[in-house]
Image (cartoon, rainbow, N blue to C red; front, top):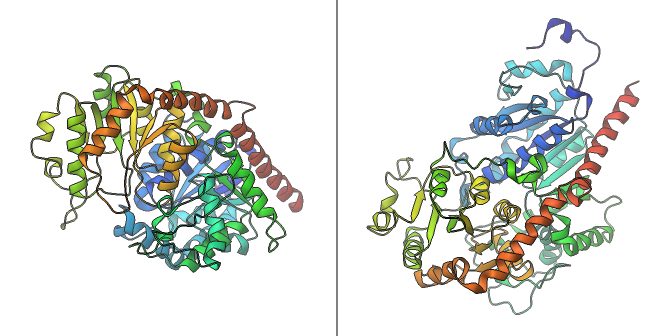
Length: 524
């Protein structure tokens, strides 16, 4: 707690003497982790962070912040409550949560910002609901006294925070956790909606265009862009979200300029040609966020002492294991799990398969994974494979020398981690921007092999066997493997001093410090 002498001070002090920013991720794991990585990186620059998160995610965020990080004393965590049904996010609850937050937490977020703008009253958070505060400081729980924030950094799915930023005259930066081409697609979608091009029929003959990327057919697009989609997302809502994104001061994209230079150039030209705005957001390519803090792949722990996945990999031959994971949101239907299992078994390859188990009617996890895969599969493959149902340390798995390939749902975090480790992929996109990501890896970067998958169709065991053997055993995959190794060097260099992502981060931090200096001068 703050001492009495601190409370009576006439001037608030920012921890470390740098800027103070508010970081607000969308409360789903795939969005929380990048914001934590960005916050840790900014803290290593001397920036103080107030991290706002839903209470159920507090423990995991605190663990991520405190794990082997010497600068975490500059990060404090403020919590707010969400209903239990939004904690374990899936494809449908994610959309529900997107609508719930602006309707029910807009005022809560504004109240938090208001209190942070008056830092001498920050201890009031300890006694006020529904915004309790928890502070991370070394291995203790204490209380920091930051100066008023100079900006808000909020997630790409939290466009409504732009209104709060405007209310308090704070710049807002959007953390765009997907790729630059997805950002370009969202902005161009406003024109497509106006032209009646989306929702798009599945048999549309004319492709859509975004600068710097091959033409987009219906199979490349998110389901919400397509006719007949089960995921209802009003086109006007898409336009509104894109507009809020344009109003941001800047967009921080988890990508590397060398990977998407044509798309990034196209975005900049598109924004500059927009006559509706005098100022357009600055694009900062700052990825992969996985590397921006550590900056050394060899620092990733791979000893496996405390994790079954890593222990399993330690027992396998070098470059022999296919890692399989479909992320934290989508749950494959039982029929698809069965086909995937049979394809793996007949392929004969070694595998580490992380499965997200659906909850039963009673809300509890299915008692046995054996109920979701073919009878006898676990016993028949026990010498070559591991099926794992708990959280898995994906970055460490991909960095392990036993890992040879990655069968992925093409979430952008997963792709950036795979590229960072130089691991080639099998692309099996499921929803959202994953189709676009998969095509990028296969047709543009040539670091992946695609599963032949039609819209809403089950992928059969023969197709699974084909792509698995092609990536893991066939000599034709050598070019894919070599390209993956080369791209690993590219993204590593981007995060070294003088690299493109490091420069972009430096520019962003310079902007934050300039805002802090200007605020201090205005207070004199």
